[in-house]
Image (cartoon, rainbow, N blue to C red; front, side, top):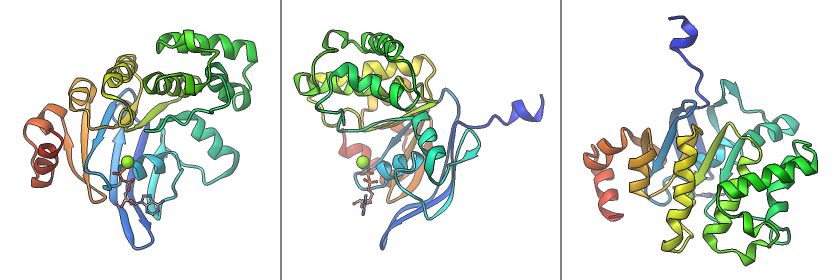
Length: 250
Ligand code: ADP
Ligand code: MG
């Protein structure tokens, strides 16, 4: 095997990332790699730095030291290159963050039209396909408030996919949803994972993690304390911190 095939470039790589908010040390020497097509689930107590970690990958937060590489390239600092990179990493948040005064269809076409300069008709065709894929095509001409939370979150996923991202970050995408809507969103994510999307998912949904995660990272107090196979982690956590945490979310 050549050097190249032995060491594939990860889609996302963090090397010794450090981050403070004032006196608060939020990310402590965080290193991780996400290979192309891999699904990584990030789990850990509230306040442990999971959202901050996701946000640094998209450079919605700066880091104090360390490196973040996307397909082997350092994150651009600012300007057009940063905007272009951001468009390549989709992000779905707990709150759906749809534009309230735009229709569902417009929410999905805006990015492709304005950022990727896709022809409007073509963007609309593709948006309708994506909305069908996530099961909300009938809602295309409504505004977000007319949809349920689960439907809005599926639109948010379609909106990210419309940008043809290299990877998707999901930060507790089902935490704000009523219980009966959680599965309709998870099902879309399971499908995406099956299709080979590279994903980082912050979630406490253990069944989801067992089904689709290739790897679980357990984070507490800004550090990655455990990393490994999901079943191994959930059935035999190695640290006391992880045992306590898993007990608390049962
Ligand atoms: P998690 O997503 O695991 O719950 P966060 O990344 O949101 O954790 O937060 C980690 C820590 O950083 C928390 O103590 C939180 O209060 C703090 N924090 C997050 N964002 C900011 C910010 N913009 N300014 C100051 N402190 C912050
Ligand atoms: Mg969070």
